[in-house]
Amino acid sequence: MVRARRLSPQSAAVLTALAASGEQWSHGYDLCRTLDLKAGTVYPILIRLTERSLVETAWETDPPRGRPARHLYRLSAAGAELARTLAPSAPAGRRASGAARLAPRTI
Image (cartoon, rainbow, N blue to C red; front, side, top):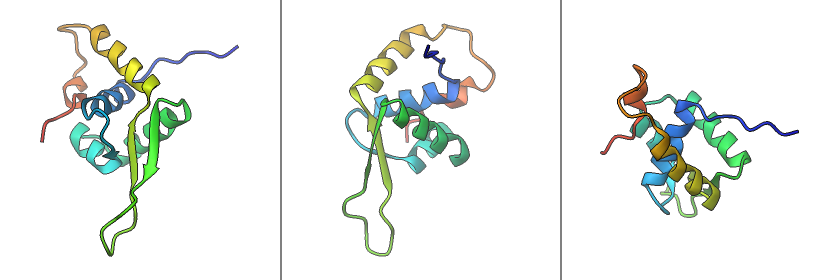
C-alpha cells in the first residue's frame, strides 16, 4: 500500500513559486533567492518533486560561453493541479513564524 505524504511548507512554497512562473522554466538558484531558502533545502525538494512527476526538468540548451549548462525546472500538469489545490487550503490568519519567508518574493 502506497502512503500519500503531505508536503512540507518548503515543498509547498517551491510548488507555489513554480506555479507563479507559469510555463516558463526556472533555475534552482532563482528559486533559492525567491524563497529565501538554502540550496541544500531547495534542490532535494526539486529532486523529490521530479521523482513524483510534479516537476519537469531539462538542461539549458544554449548556456553563455564560459559557464556550464544549468538545470531548469517547471511544473508538470500534475504539479500545476496540486499547486492550484494548495492555495485555497492555506489557513487564513494562521501562519507559522517562518511561513512569511516561504511565500515567493517579487523581484
